[in-house]
Image (cartoon, rainbow, N blue to C red; front, side):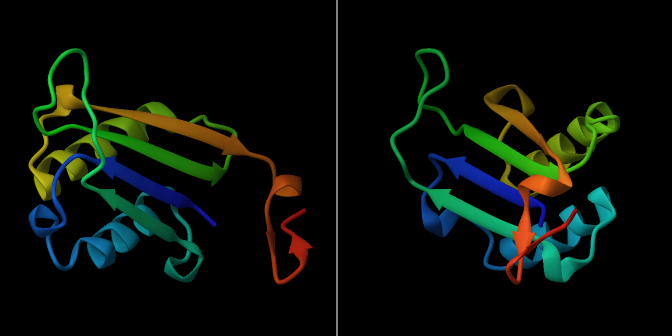
Length: 113
């Protein structure tokens, strides 16, 4: 169920070919969830800027069933992962966490509650 969405102005050819698999494994381990529940989406090459600069940048969204207690720790680790795999400086992307309750997520027609 964790969703890891990356919106970046990098062109598709700048995204490592195995990024989806790397990100899936990383997110599963980081959030302590099974890999088969992890969704990774990459939206490459949209028109984006941070401030007045369109240098490489990103917006990262992390949705997870959690109370958010570990978001501070996750922020450090996700930042390091994104910076090292996509080569985007850590001051050029934001991470937005959405903490969901079990009642708000369903699989196979049933919520996780």
